[in-house]
Amino acid sequence: HALFDKDKETIWSVKKDMLNKFDTFWIWMDAGDTFWIDDVKIWRRIDFRKPDYVAENAFQFLNNFNLELSLDNKHWFMVTSEHNFENGNRYYYESKINHQKARYIRLNFFVNKADDLSISEIEVFGNKVVN
Image 1 (cartoon, rainbow, N blue to C red):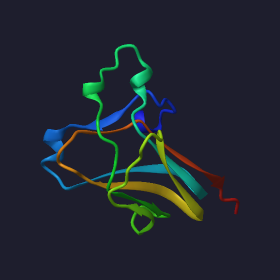
Image 2 (cartoon, rainbow, N blue to C red; image 1 turned 135 degrees about the vertical axis):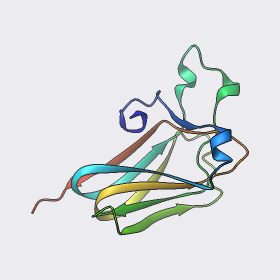
Image 3 (cartoon, one colour; image 1 turned 45 degrees about the vertical axis):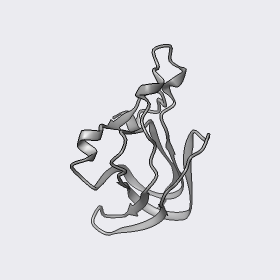
């Protein structure tokens, strides 16, 4: 999957016609085991370095979203929330999380129906829980 392939020049995107059908989208991942999560980075599209990049095709980055964690993929707790977030010239959004125990990570985003949307990578940092 493009969001977890460790290649920041691949993208995951949602076109405007799909955004107009729904108010909320979410993406989740299973870390495969339980981790102490300390940091999450969500990268905006950075493939502008490629020779075939066309600025008019660039998509909007997230501006209304929250990040949730779960141990069981049923009960979620929010660790960060942003409304009208402006990324400026930074390539990524970073959420420093205070050492939270989780296996599942979910990004919920609430759409601005004006533009297409893209994300190039989601990175999750932490240490495996040792029993």
